[in-house]
Length: 247
Image (cartoon, rainbow, N blue to C red; front, side, top):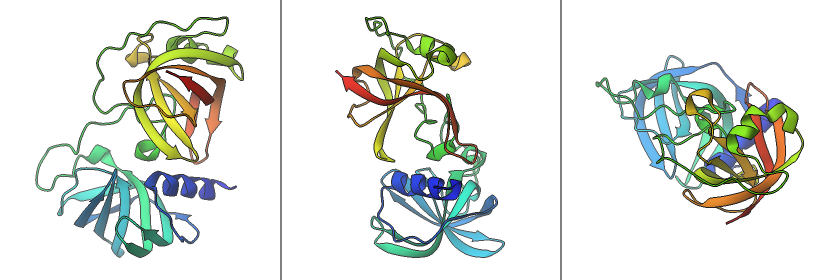
């Protein structure tokens, strides 16, 4: 599977829609004026007026108003895309991330479109299940460390990723972010009170087929993977892959 196909599959799975879509083609950053906004679930569809004419685009849900001038980064064109949520098939639509942190998302105001998402251990922008830490700081987390020879804290995994590469670990943490059903997995961010946000050592990404909700304290068992690359610069420094969860 090439990079274009991989990213296209990720975008479609995140949107959660069945689509009879043609091949995706990467394009440069897309700039335009918002003519129409349609929100569904966690995503926002935008009809844009651009220098090349009108086009539709889709981003993770954002507070965008008609009249705003926006930039869509990491754009990917999909042809013949069917949105079941909108009951509409788009001849062509651009998937991407809202650029400039949504600074111009509110027309005729200087306000932001929301908090800027931090990106621990990877960068897929707003479409990356692994990049999205909580938009607002969660309450202080303090979870007791797991027991056993392979037990580690979040900070120990992040800081010791090179020595732990491809090794099994167990870790107890609190779920602070969940993205479900992406590429056949659930993507969780765990914190346990160890590490520091300023150093990026307080938050760890876990992929699993098990289910957990924000606020759950879980015991995770899985294998450490490092330097995971999905292509096009969408990389993870460290994560726990294919983990099992116990509550």
